[in-house]
Image (tube, rainbow, N blue to C red; front, side):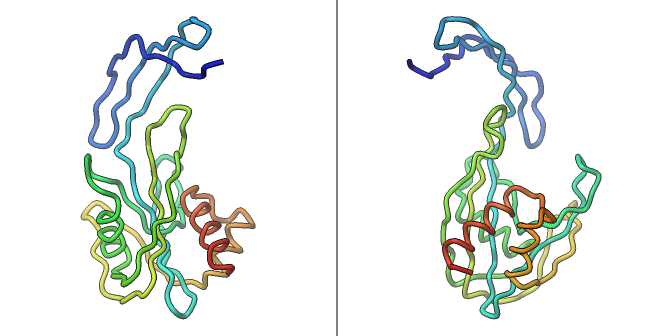
Length: 178
C-alpha cells in the first residue's frame, strides 16, 4: 500500500511572525478525505557547547505556553531561507557568548510531525572561547555552566523536559561515550 496523502485543498487560517496555521484537506491512500491541521515553522537550531573541562552552557528561560522556567541548551529559530550552520554559530554567540573552533552537525529532528513542519538541526560545539552573550531585546535568560555528566543525569531523571535538549544530550553522550 502506498502511504502518500495528496493535498486537495489548503486554507491559511493565520499568519504570524513565526508560524502559519493551515487547514488542509487530504486524500488518503484509500481515497477517503481527511482534515489536516498544519503549523508551518521555519525551523531552528540547538547547540551543545562542550568546554574542555567537561562543562556545558545551559540557559534558563521562561516559556510562556507552559508558564514555567525551562532549562535548555542554546537554541534559536531560523529566519526564513536561512542556512542552519550560520544560525547555530549566531545563536551560540548571542545566547551564551561563545565562539567555537569546531562545530559538528549531529542531524535533525522533526519535533512534532503530526501537525508541525518544524525541523530542528543539532550541533556539538567544541574548542570554545568564552565571550559576552548578547540576547535579543525580547529574550531574557540566565546562563549557567554545569558538568555534562550532571546535565545527562538530569535528562535521565526527567528533570530536563525540553525535547531538543534531551535528544542532543543523548546523542552527544552516545557519540563521545560520556
